[in-house]
Length: 128
Length: 362
Image (tube, rainbow over all chains, first blue to last red; front, side, top):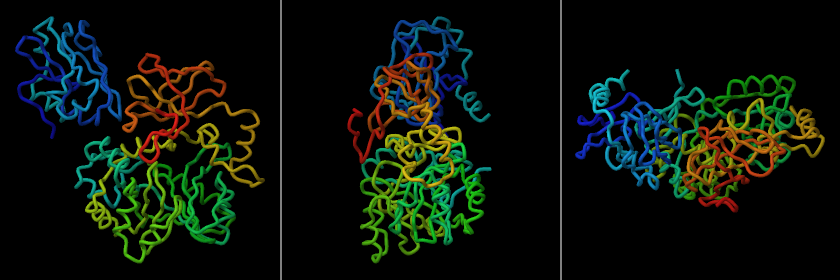
């Protein structure tokens, strides 16, 4: 059974969203997603300063098996990216909710967070 | 409903993630396919390849039949136990399957064919065998475990009965011997040394468990694919199929046409040679970031080609692939990766042999 932390928000396309202390949100892919993809070998992230719209394809993660698009869960300006992933994409496999985060955005619209799934709803979406 | 090999429960017990492969429920990995890959390059790993089929061809005219059936020439098989890689072609020169044929004795040869093609292969072989008065016997009673890696042979030999160790240790590459119940072949699909052991199904679990105890790690089809691609070995259904001739798939070296031997597909291949083979099969390396995948378009000066196999090479830590480009292409080639054109370097496979990058690859 995959790990789904209670304190995060989720999308049906297997991204997670976490509210940081500074008000920005951090985005990554779920344990379920990394498990399904297998060993990750390459990550293409947005650039700091990019404006991303909710639902846009903003990043690509590639495993040995397949390439998978990452869709922006929320609208906002990219303020940080996880540069460690360039040398070690396996961080996503080892620690998808921690060291394997992808990027951070400054939210444009707080209310978009309400569109996201809570842990329970995400877990249910996996069972469908 | 996918079929299960004898070792299915052993895979589940080892934590395998199972996928459908050619109608069989097979392990794709047991956690990390990259770790399994490195295990084979550096130590020893084992693969359940029981989904593949051993087929014994028996009868006085076996050699004559195989000489007609196969594009490589079984006349090369003179010593008992010798193995030969060959394509089996249709009349149009397309590849029905690729296989290994082992010479057991003058009235008995063993073919090892792919899983997904087994039914059509058997139908084809039986049809062609009609006039030759042969027995065509699929050996569904046998399972196959491939043990591969620099320490693989040593670990297998430590488990063989004492009287068979010397025969096993003296097997040369691409030779096999029947040692008691085990048919032990020094062959593989990884670019490493090792054995492929064909054994009675009822002994498969015990042998698998003893290999585990000897420190041989189970490896899934994921690692098998990255290993074979690094080794520059074609995969049937991807790198060639019934619409592709061996000459278009980098397998010209397996087609024996120097003498007058008649074999199925020969006329078509001769016509293609005379008219010019339209495709060149080549290896690719992507120096930039990204992963080559089967089906990606290759842009050349003479039109488009295609990546037929691509992956991330765990040994080289960059993307590698194989595929077809137009024969007239010269200069640089690019791959179309999600709309971006990225420069490819053309190389001659293999990429990796015996744990190290081949010359000209790095």
